[in-house]
Image 1 (cartoon, one colour):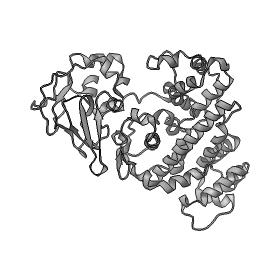
Image 2 (tube, helix red, strand yellow):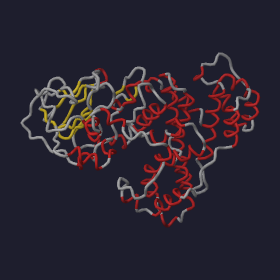
Image 3 (cartoon, one colour):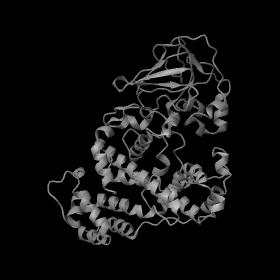
Image 4 (tube, one colour):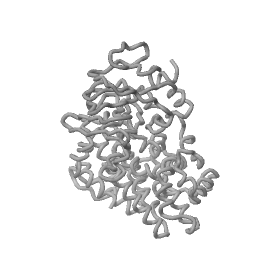
Length: 450
């Protein structure tokens, strides 16, 4: 079976039209299709390059698929798929309007030619909503296998930055700051932040299986961090049965792995600061966002199990670590060659690959190294079990709710990671129900950093 057939399904005009018998390799028709008199539109390369993650497949594959391909056309009242059924197709809305019924979670509407329609209506292994056509609609239907493409590259490849990449907006590529940064980045001449000594020493010591007394000696090199660990061990998050007053008892209660992750997490704050007033303000804003994200990650992991909460907290904190080398670089770049707008435009294109680069240099384990790139890779699916990357992705999307950015992003219930939560109670209106219920725990987690 060829690549196109595996990713997109069978080739031909309106191959899955209502009433046609499915051929080998084709998708089974779904219930309640209502005919439409509208003429199907032709699928073009321009259409495909607007769709996520289809656009990542490359022009050659997309051009071959688009040849003689047409959309599927259905009338008002058509049910494209039903909530809870296995997802055998991924649908993109090209024309018209669709209602997404979440059952008790409410409903929302998707209109063609909006930011939401650039994403699949649903991309999990089971449909999270019932999709009902409100008008005549035209849809593109492809195989769910398309959601798992382009994940074979190693960290070195995925951390590469091509300043000539046409997918990067010209206003970003043409900036002097961006161009100069890319040159230094390729030549490995950037200033990379170093982990504070206490974090480095502790990580090495725990890797060598030292005893608790040795760990205590290292942690006490930084009295502020030692005090934080005592505070954490006494927090309601750990359901303490008795108060703890010394560093050793705190480490015993937390465990060595949790102590290591928490010490690294607290040490990271020292990296988000510099002398330039404007750049330092940006670093502080990034730190606050990272702390909030890490708190969401911590509580989501705590509530669902399967992922270590302290590991999730650390993953949230390092997901945007890639901003630091760029902002350090901007601090030392001639001020007349850049503006705050240049930084704001460039950061979304740099934080992922540069973050991978930093974590590789810090010798973090692979599952953490990949976090900066996967944090906003909404349709990444690492398997059936809830993973660290799922926790960060869900928390990232949740953190955008209520901001202007959310209008450009997929509905939170439509991404693969949402299906892996313990209760799976997700909707755009109610966000992550588990996080709403855990509001007090989130606030407790935030207090650990301030």
